[in-house]
Image (cartoon, rainbow, N blue to C red; front, top):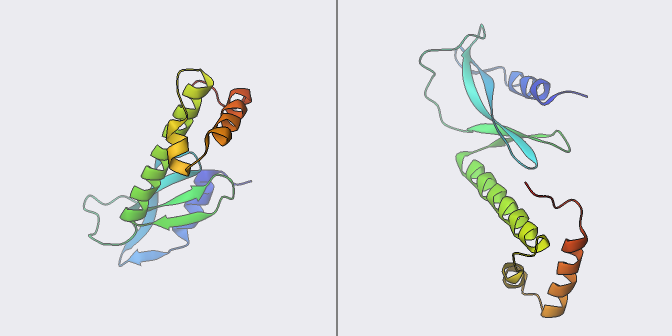
Length: 136
């Protein structure tokens, strides 16, 4: 199985020369819950870095899915969306953890999904039983 670095290297090399005299490289930036994110960087054709990278528009970077190992190119907007989704995942986990620890309520869940009290009680019982919800 390929490592994330090997996948990233293969992915950027697949583009070849992206601008006259330049190829893509990558820089690992962030480990998200479900994906690894890399910035695109420019290198000269010989692989060396340039003091003054070319000015260009387009994709800011790419992700590698942790489960499928598929790559996906991201625009600035899509990167912002990924950050928002990650924040929601972390907030949800923190809320579930506080319920499990007895210090929080599920009112946020009831509001978000328009749940009735009976459904909410069933969910709370299941949360308390879960072993994968652990203190960070």
